[in-house]
Length: 223
Image 1 (tube, rainbow, N blue to C red):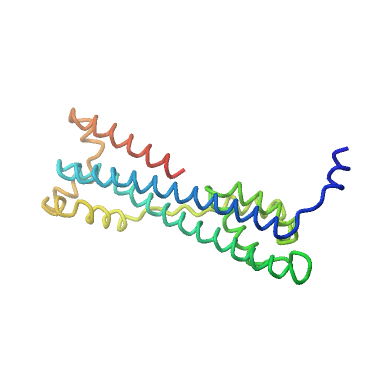
Image 2 (image 1 turned 30 degrees about the vertical axis):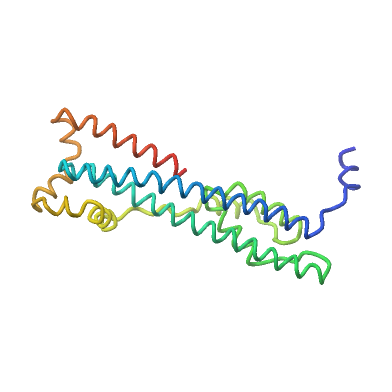
């Protein structure tokens, strides 16, 4: 019975498909914008914590927080790239529909396929892109991807390591004046003593708990 209903059910025309796809793409863009705002709001707390750590000469905690800040900024940059690619998909789909008005059907788009495949690597929109891939393949906009190709796309996200130079740059920019006031030998020693200070002093226990709490909040908004 269900098969009969599917046969009798009229297929959506290209304009209907485009409206639905673009609506969902706009929703994904809004979700990304909200996530960016959440991360940037949390970054302000991290910057404040870095300055406070530097004031009490706790350069180990300051450096650890700077590392989290570098990671968050990379996440924000990636989110902006994802948003730009979503907008590009919407634009190329509009072009495909315009062509379909002339030829009577949707044609394959290499650009759309490339963009969708790229976005399958992005955790924030991977599930949506898998759905889009299936729907667009069925509509004739994309070629069918083999299961291995989909798996590779989902597993091949590059995780960039935060370099020492990036961390030092952020640390200097935020707590530069405070950090610069420390003698170089003391500053380097502080950077190596994050574990020892927790064991030897009473107050750093609270500092470590606060550090973990900040890390957890950042990880939550990045995910």
